[in-house]
Every structure is written in C-alpha cells, then in structure tokens.
Image 1 (cartoon, one colour):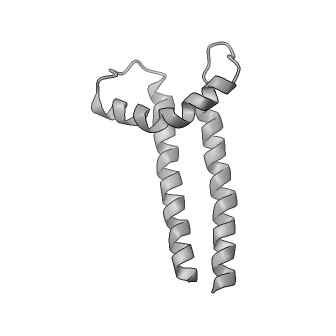
Image 2 (cartoon, rainbow, N blue to C red; image 1 turned 60 degrees about the vertical axis):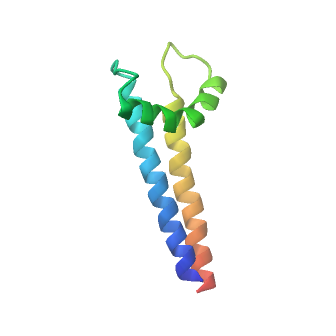
Length: 95
C-alpha cells in the first residue's frame, strides 16, 4: 500500500512540476506578442487560462501588470510542499 501512495505522490509531483513550467511559459509569452494561432501558444493558453482567469478576476489591477501567474506559481509550490509531505508521511505510516 505504501508503494502505491509513494507512486501517486511522485506522479502528483511530476504533474505539478509540468504545470508549473507551463505557467512560467505562459508568463514569458505575455512579454512578447506571439501569434495566438500558433498551436503551441494555443495549447499553453488553453491549459493555463482555466486557473488564471479566476485569479485574475479577483486580483486588483496594479499598473497593468498581471500578477496572476505569480500567484498561481506560489499556489503550485505550496501544494507541492504541503500535499506531498502529507502523502509521503501517509505512505510511511502505511508501510
């Protein structure tokens, strides 16, 4: 049972790392003016917009700078630290 929980924790960590890099790519793309019709740009926007849009609606405008990717990155890092620690402790106690 503990090996299954550890495997799920590693998979969860991998998914969060991958999504973190996608959010970073979205933030970097916002500095440039890429074609919105490029397939990679469309993929990155479609993957990040469902989480960035609600954050963006709740954040106040600060000089035209979008801080929603930064806040989402902080949330992802917190999830990695907290939930992974809990899953690893759960696996150790189940072992």
